[in-house]
Image (cartoon, rainbow, N blue to C red; front, side, top):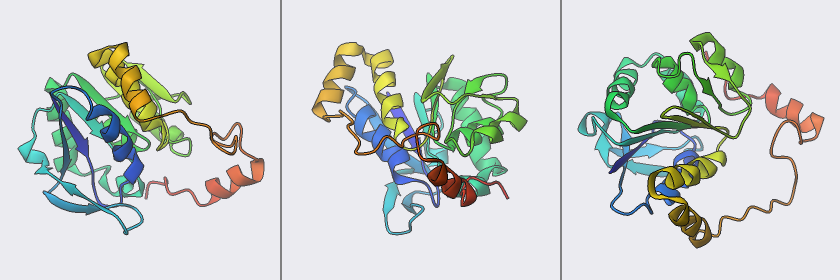
Amino acid sequence: MQIALVIYDRFTALDVVGPYEILSRIPDAETVFVAAEAGPVRTETGSLAITADKALAEAPSPDVVVVSGGPGQSALMEDEPLLDWLRTADATSTWTTSVCSGSLLLAAAGLLKGRRATSHWLALEQLRPYDVEPTGERVVFDGKYVTAAGVSSGIDMALTLVGRIAGDDLAQAVQLGTEYDPQPPYDAGSPQKAPAHIVDKLRARSRFILT
């Protein structure tokens, strides 16, 4: 089983590192980072790079596709080489997934038309123009399409996917092995829970505005 994690300039690191850490523990899984070209790709901060093992063209038919989000996504909404690769890979994939604003790229490729999907809370409404029904759920399954909300939710998505692919016992073993037992110091992980002035501050400087 090949799992292709799609990265690009100014992606968000945890969007793919989280799912990678979980999905790579599936027995016999080959996890590869893919980008327009093989080589180092910088995250949104510029201070971290992840190496793309293969160019997109070198991984035409992965079993699982994971598309990361991040501010760099906005510049790729009309990038035909990437969108064409997503369509081609999706034609034979078992699962096509995304984390955060990566769902906007799946939508731009036409893969989520008529489906329910999620994204970062600041980007949810940008799904509607692509005939996608946005939902604020943390992880959304609609057929073989799986979308996760913002950043950290990719871990939840990946664990759920491990359960679907390899069974609940393995998924629980992976959760235990990674000691994924969230106990955050604040209850501010969603716009419904966070203080209103924090929500307004993030909305005012939103990085998920398409230009």
